[in-house]
Length: 287
Image (tube, rainbow, N blue to C red; front, side, top):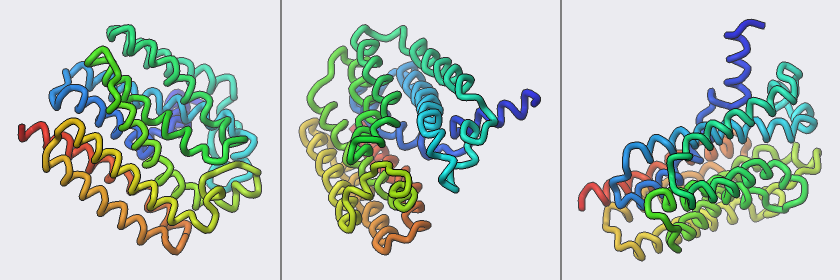
């Protein structure tokens, strides 16, 4: 196998050809970066967190595929992943994941001690998430913590502390993650039952659609409350209004529980995160 073919496998392994995962991790991180930076974060901070997001998401995909390699072969959608189908050896995948995590750590070395300390639970959360699907009824909540941990790190990097508002934004991200990853889990419901894997779609059962909408409402409400605490203005809330409209659109997609429409709703969540971020940026731009 030549270098080009090997790189193609690595791209598939890290899902760089499917950027939705990066975006869902990036948006809440950028919420934290912009708010902590009072709308004007230093360019090097933005670069560090954007690149770190890409690296950690890529490493997370590898760890997830390594942990699920014996499950993925039984699911049509995942049976062609490089570790499962034998194109990449498990030990090679782990070395690649370790290299990506190390690269992300080197990125934050110039930052303060608190940020470095917070990077430890961030890595542990990312590495342990795949295991939660074996025993935790709603692993999507754990994923929400892992995907939102860039928020307190962004505050730590720019202010040297993690105020309460950072944790509230992290909580909002947990609810948002449960919403969009339940939509995703609704696609894989039958496979998860067959394999004995836990998911929020199975936990919520016939109330899954209601639970998704309730989580969207909780996320928007908490983000609105954070904005009120910070004294943010109308542009911030306009962004939340757009996000609410997007959540309503997702309801129209998932209400009949069709697999294709549920997956479409999941993919569309990048616009939810972008709407919130746009409101944050516009708020500070108009100050």
